[in-house]
Image 1 (cartoon, helix red, strand yellow):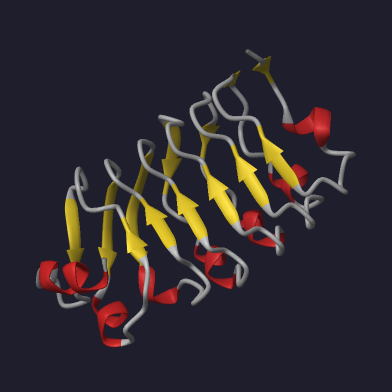
Image 2: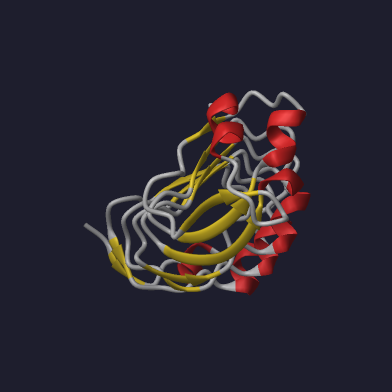
Length: 165
């Protein structure tokens, strides 16, 4: 099991495509300056570490990212950065079991997204446009959220999410 700070140590390895450092004890933040250099990473798996702080806006500079798993980092806080809507390659997003909160407009995410898990977070999300657009996505985020999913008007839309799952 690895511990300590990781991003400064690997920041010079900008040719990396897959980073799988899950199930360790890194107690680092997701450094803005370090993420800027990782434009070739397709898979970033940091599941069940001790990362803390927020997800920086600069995560969107990881333009090749297909899969992002930050689940189980219970010290991650704040909201999902709006800049993530520009990540056109993203197909899998796992943020479950963190302290991510706020409003998350799923309709703004890339059409390449095929799997989302934001369960047991404190996220209010909008989903109405997904069912209307007939998007085929495995959405595993409903249980444990403070306010599951609603339309922008605030009306629950449980029928909508059931139709897309």
